[in-house]
Image (cartoon, rainbow, N blue to C red; front, side, top):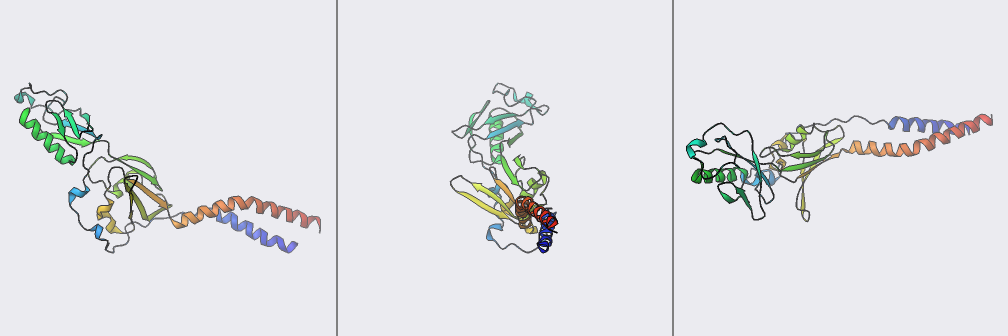
Length: 261
């Protein structure tokens, strides 16, 4: 019986030691191999630009007028429209019929247009009917993505500029955790009925230039754990359950051996 004590003591020490997790390190942008995937070839810029949809929220500002867009009306003298830039922007929701209602213009169809195209359209319409030299600034303020998994600050992130990349978003979230699998980051996009999964390998420097890494509104980005972190967690879970049982059994053996000396 005394000979059985030593193997159990060794097992106890093993499980105690393995319950401590090892720190992981990412190796980003190390590989320089060319990505052969045809989807990574240069594509037209328009394919990567968001097109306005109904229910979108547009922020519109006239940079050449001290008055806001809401205050403008056709009776305003064009010569008096030149002044300091407005510090306040108004938001307008795109209606179900694809139009946005603007003072002095009525309902302007904007669905299907990019941000830049809608901006130029509204600018030209105001130039024709109301303003001498309008400079219109337009933003789509409801565009966002969801970032989940092994990043420092997961959550919802607003796309504040055109063509935001995956690397920029991860940087905004504080970077990857030590448990992250940088070789397989998933971008889920599409409809609920037909979702599509795109995988990005941040271990390859070519991923920076990949059109697939340009984010779109509604994307869900998931950063999974690496294999070592998964194994460590599984081992910790196992040792958490088995360790008390093993310690109790070893204690019983030691007491039994001391009693029967």
